[in-house]
Length: 328
Ligand code: FES
Image: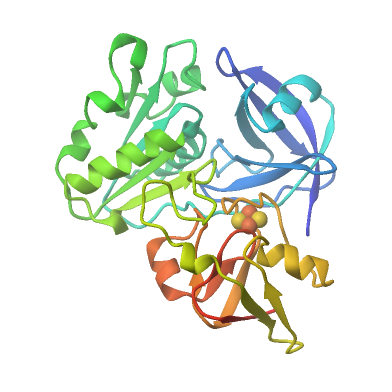
C-alpha cells in the first residue's frame, strides 16, 4: 500500500472537543485532491483511521483534517488528541475520494457535527468555481461547532446557516427550506453521525427527492445484525452462507465460511490485498468482480455502482451466488 510521510505543521482548536491538524510533506509535494477526499492516518501498528480533508482543494502545500475527540470511540481520536504534537511525523495514504462533487446546477450541503469536514472542502471548491449552493451545519451548541470561526469568515458565510440544538434548532424540527420540495438538477450531500444521516435521507426521500440526487458519506458503518442486514430491515441470513471466492490470475478457489470475511480468507492464504478501515467505509479494498453477484455491505458505493456489481469491498461484503470470480 502506497503511503506518504508528512509532518504535523500546526494544531489548532476547532471547537471545545475538536482540533485541526495541518499536515505538510516531509519531502517534495503532496498529491492533489478533490473535494470530498479522505486520507488514512497511521497512528499505530494496527491503528489506521480515515479523516476527510477539509481545506480547499486549490491549496497544494498542505492537508487539513479536523478530528473530534470521541471518548467512547475506537481510540483513533483519543490517540490523535493525546499523543500527536506539532513536529510529529505521520504516515498517511494518498487521498481517496468516494464522495465527489457531481455535476448539477445547484448543490445543497447538509452536515451534522464533525460531518462538516468533507462538506467544507466541497463548499470551498463550489465557491471557487462560482457554483450555486447552500451549506447547513447542525451542531449541539456554539462551543461544539467544529470550524465555526472558519465558516463565519469564509467566502460563503452568507450561504451558510449554522443550527444549534441547544437553541431548539435541530434537523428533527424540520428539513432546511431548500430540501422541503425536490428540485431538478440539484445535488444533495449529507455527512454526519449515523442517526443524523439516516433521518436526513429518510426525510428527503419522503419529500420526493430521487436516490440518485442524495450523496452521503458515513464515518462508521450502519448498525447491522450478525447476519449482516441493517438493523430494522428484513433478515438476509440466507446470504451469509458459505461461498467460494476464485482468484482469476491463479484459478484457485477459497471457501469463505459464514463467520469470516473474504479479506480474512485471502490474507490467510497468502493472497495480497489492500485493507484500511475494514468496515466498508474507506474503499481501500475495492476489488474487481468478473463473475458472480456480490452482496454489498459497504457504505461507500453509490446505488449505481452497487447495481453494476463489478467491484466488491472484500473487508465486509459477501456473495449472493455460490461463487465470486475476483479480478486479482
Ligand atoms: S478496507 Fe475500507 S472499505 Fe474495505
